[in-house]
Length: 264
Image 1 (tube, one colour):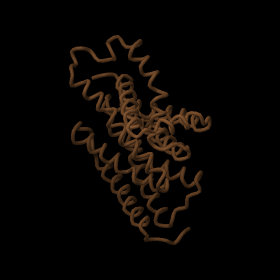
Image 2: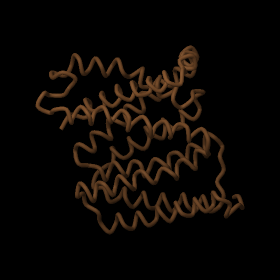
Image 3: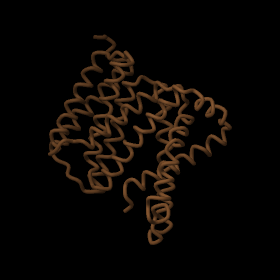
């Protein structure tokens, strides 16, 4: 198994090349240069690049070290961070049933947090870093593809230096690991790129608090993977927590489609 930082390096490099191909096909180099020349947007993208690097590195390390359940907890907390940012900083208002749904989800997350037998630094780092990333990307005046190309482009030189100079084996992959490892690393760039493109596009099209609740789908799948494929512990506490979270998600979805219009 490759170290987390080496996997991260490949993930960023191949994602950047993937975005470059799309930019070239779309002939969007002019838009990219325009964003680079705008100091405010470039500064925001530097910060978001740092946040997504922290998020990816901690997540990869958590998966490699067999802590997928706690990693999923981070992404259960993340939607609450998004909703809080949407309400406090973007002045988004929640209808009554949406407030109830947030409280239910918070109870569920709280139950999961108590279940962890130590300070959940992995979960909190993942939640805060991705919450901050999504918020700043929503405020940046950069189209999804352009912004991601700039972010990964800013990071790629550092990743190339790490793989070329710091790591002993060529690009961090030993000859004995074979072609399949290279295929997986290359595929990581594409698998990284497509969801982030859709995420950044979605955050600009819908309310940020709604983005928060939709993000409960991903950690649910992560938790199921941790339990089914990696045989991590799933207790009655997890079941109780899930019940609160999914009840909150159902209420939020119903209210977002027109039910519960009365505002606080």
